[in-house]
Image: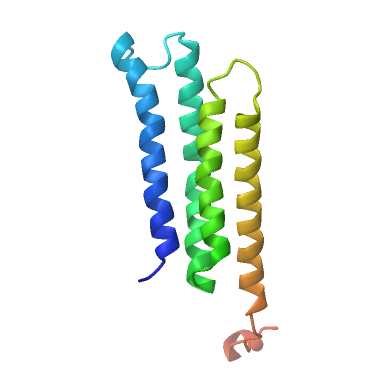
Length: 143
């Protein structure tokens, strides 16, 4: 199977996205809020948690897919995927509070660490296997 970690991770992200959306939709339905947060503080926080997930997840999924494609499945990718999912759950829960919490801070910090490690792995993979490619003759004449 091609990209088993990324496929599993993407499915988990889809379910997490649905959970974050449902947390907002419950308020919208019960309070008949069609747009925005209507001044409802908890709804605003949950909307922001959902938006924050949507801001980070696409680039993280892309990095996971490309890293797995380049290096193959590995235990560290499984651990990274699990850490990201748990971090985003913690962040979503932590966003409900009126003041900073360890859940929110920890979720954000682990998200950043996973993204940073993936970016580093992607760069290492890209340049570790790079070889010199000769300049095409048409370009060499211009140099």
